[in-house]
Length: 42
Image (cartoon, rainbow, N blue to C red; front, side):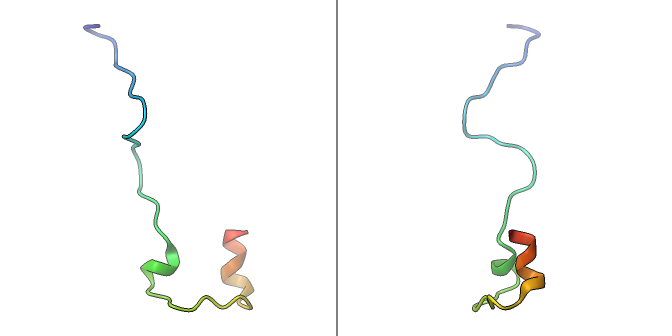
């Protein structure tokens, strides 16, 4: 296995870390009537 890449199983995924947009904006109450915001998640 000198020149071949090793396969990694589980664990290390690369890329951006996913985050909650509501937590990032410090929103305590999510308004279910705010359709424009909720459309992104449906």
